[in-house]
Amino acid sequence: MRTQRSRAGARSADQGRREQADDRYAEDDDRYADDDDYSDDESYDEEEAVEPIPAGEAAREGLRQVSRLTGRDPSGVTSVQPNGNGWRVGVELVEDHRIPASTDLLGLYEVDLDADGEVLSFRRVRRYQRGKGEVG
Image (cartoon, rainbow, N blue to C red; front, side):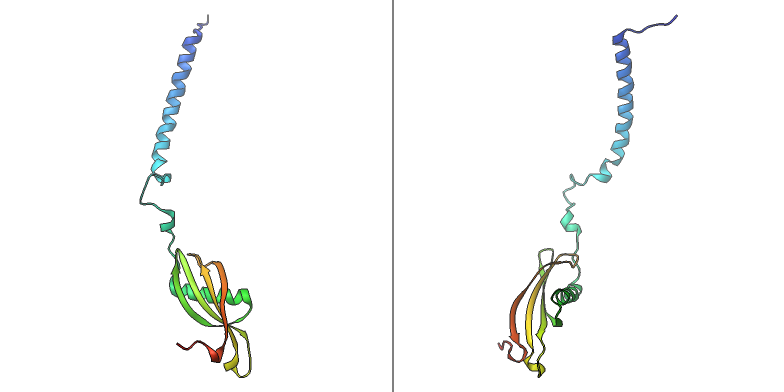
């Protein structure tokens, strides 16, 4: 002979088993909560975690990238400045080779690099003849 439980009794027994199972998983979740949750930690800031490349590397990368983008011969780096989380690099390129070389046409470019050295933007600031640069 089978014993039958009332529906209310069966429901409360099922609910008790579910609560035990839920509690078991809740304990497991608590073990990993501190590992994944950085939102409560005020000292953690994703932007602070990114350290920009050194100035020398930024200068070399800026020179290489502008030369590659324009297809012109590099003359040299004229400046390197921190720019937010990256760098602004001044690059001088030979835009037109002439004879004599003192009459070459040069272009001064600025390139903005992010913290990893990737180009964000570049522009030509000025154009001038090599022998007639600014005197100041």
